[in-house]
Amino acid sequence: MLKFFSAPLFAGAILGVLFPYQSLTLTWTSSLLLFLLLFLNTLAIDKRKFVRLSLRRSAWVQCLLAQFLIFVFFPVMITAGALQFLRDQDFAFGVAVATLAPCALVNPFFAQVRGGHSGLALLNVVVSTLLGPFVTVPMLALTALSPVFIDTKFLLLYLLLLTALPLAVSAGVSALAPRLAKASVKGLPVANSLVLASLMFILVGSSLNRVPFRMLLSTDLFILVVIFLVLDFGVFGVVRWTARAFFNRPDAETLALSVASRNFAVTATIMLIFHPKAALPSAIGLLIHTLFFQWLLSSARRKA
Image (cartoon, rainbow, N blue to C red; front, side, top):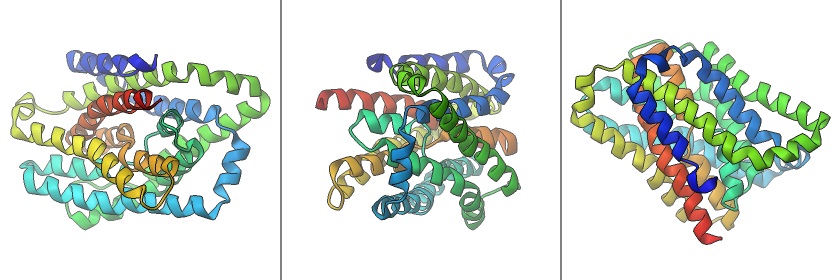
């Protein structure tokens, strides 16, 4: 299944482009799918090991470094580039929001596949998702790009429901049915692929439905594609190469994955609520993710 992991994702994206009105009616289900993603990806993780990891000082040093890169360094760099090259300010705002996205919910799965630390990847997911509401709004205010008011309380409640609740449910299921938790590992690639494909269909189609077609033919579209290629492939390569000078290989792999692979599904969903036009950059980020995820898997197989 890993060989064809991204095939359903591409199919979902294409269907979203072909049937945008149908995907728009399903926008409300995107949050349920995000909940399901984190639940599935934490179900098989040993909760005792995760608790022990969260008590280690070295884990928190790496986690805090990841948060700085996620919420400060790369948002400033990428947004500065977007302001330089994008003509549409709404798209530039959408890029700024996307660069402040927390870690992707599937990162523990990819960390395990690539020989990283799934527990550390999960710690980065939880911390970045909880920090998001408190960091995103002030950072956007500093850019003076935001044309809309974003309610921090709404973001906090929304992201709590996407982290604390699925983690609690996952811990409960693991405690009550440990065999089921272990068995879920085998079906995780298929489940991740299908859930992500559904998110692609809903969020890509919904975003395109909110943007006039003429805007999709502008040079801004090409620039957005380049920006997210850099944010995925470029950031991953730079962070991994730099981190290897300070950390062991699994830690460097996990740090690079946490910083590069972001939860654009969350930023797309939020922007569809507050500023639909600015959801397009996150939707493009999701499309680039299909290439990035497949590359992560195929390059991991070549090393094996």
